[in-house]
Length: 290
Ligand SMILES: Nc1ncnc2c1ncn2[C@@H]1O[C@H](COP(=O)(O)OP(=O)(O)OP(=O)(O)O)[C@@H](O)[C@H]1O
Ligand SMILES: [Mg+2]
Image (cartoon, rainbow, N blue to C red):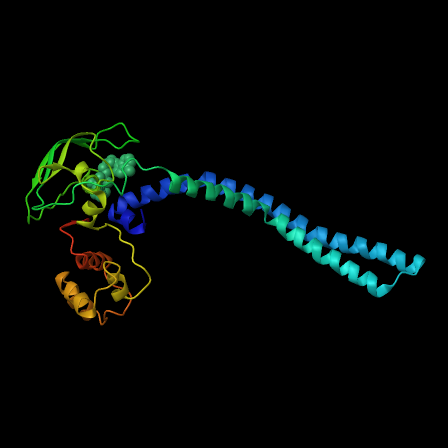
């Protein structure tokens, strides 16, 4: 959720959400202060120990020079070596809190990466969708982490070449239908068929290749419009890029804003739409707000 999403919920809700957000920040703020004190303590310790150490070493060296006639040059070399060593260990001690924080964060990230998926993205299966009729039959779906049904006995047939808009209030399950079509999840009950064949029986790479998605909040790389489009198909030539820009009704828009394909900012949804068009999918799932 970003600022624009919050604003789209209406002016009154913005204040409410900001208040809720503020409430949520109270605990992190408190732990942040605690953490700053601890690392400050370590930092102060590492800084002061350095000078205490130097003073102590010079004091001892002075005694050696004065009473035992030690060689000043060699003594200075020795002191210098100890001095550099102390700085190194001081700095590394001050980094201890960051190190343990990084370790904990890495554990979380790798935990997510290594989490086994229930649906194998490389699952083999049927690789033939002749017409592309999509049918949802008495479809019931509930997210594994929740107890309530998001979709309840949903029946829907989408015929080949038909454009369908699914409209509903926020949280009514529109994106969920898209996730089911892409097999991010399998239906809890009921059937999801494409050309009379259960979605489960298709090869996953094939199925996902056949569908293109324009997300509600697409990500664009900080690159030219052209390079962003090329993510759909790296081998497309300039003529093809122009063609899909026309298909996505975007070329006029780009030129009207005094930009060309090598400039950087443009409406995200459109760019993603024609990056997908380049890929020539059979089904496009677009998610637009407002
Ligand atoms: N990954 C998830 N795990 C658990 N619950 C989820 C998950 N994703 C969505 N939900 C819940 O499922 C319900 C339907 O969500 P969904 O995102 O499909 O709604 P939507 O119609 O697309 O809404 P919006 O218009 O805001 O995009 C909501 O109550 C939402 O909180
Ligand atoms: Mg949605």
